[in-house]
Image 1 (cartoon, rainbow, N blue to C red):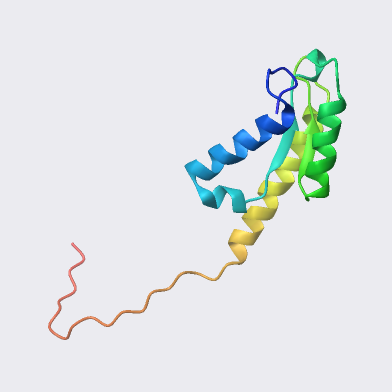
Image 2: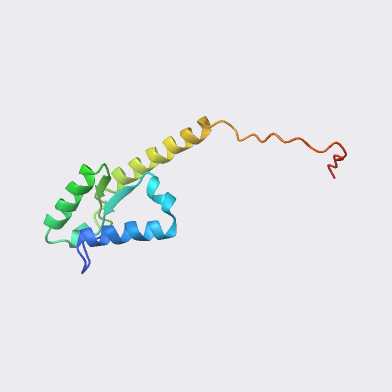
Length: 112
């Protein structure tokens, strides 16, 4: 979500969610972080403050970042690193996907 747009931050966020859903509804089930960007060019923070409050009340994780000043970048990267680490641990804890199948009696094993 950028502070540098003709659309309100709420409209931008809703557009992103709709695009994710069109691409793959499963993406909406995954963890996500919302990053407000280009904050160095924002003059009115009130719409961002309102959206951030709404998102945090809904359980979203929100970051404010500026690539010009570097503000918020390290916090966002640290958070994303933790999310990736937790997802890898969760994947490793899943039992293996074992398929049991009986072959017909007249089948021949060929490992060529």
